[in-house]
Length: 133
Image (cartoon, helix red, strand yellow):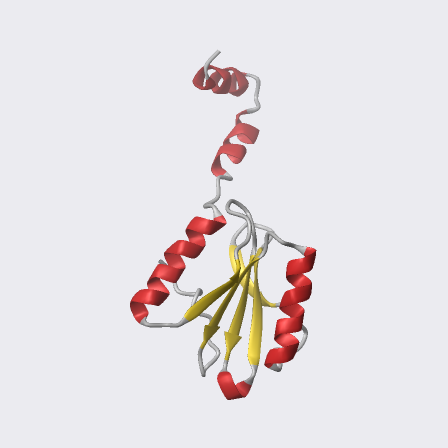
């Protein structure tokens, strides 16, 4: 039985809602998401460095924004209850010394080697990934 026939059969059993939900849950692989956003940063002349390449399909992203003399900000990419991507402070302190930020990153990568870690510099400490593409 092909996929269409299975879907039609499931629809007739009242399982179509579950099937449609599974089909709409397809997500962009993390590697592709990162590549698209880093290309935009390159085009805008924003420096970045990938310090850890995570899982191709499903790793989360940790962003280190170096404000130079202001310290560093760590943001972690998360999904809310509706599955929408967003950003949250990775630590209780919004601004960290660079040494403490690097220690946090080392611990995070040792716990989760699938984690992507991207570092960028911005004196205003703005998240460059909040822009819609």
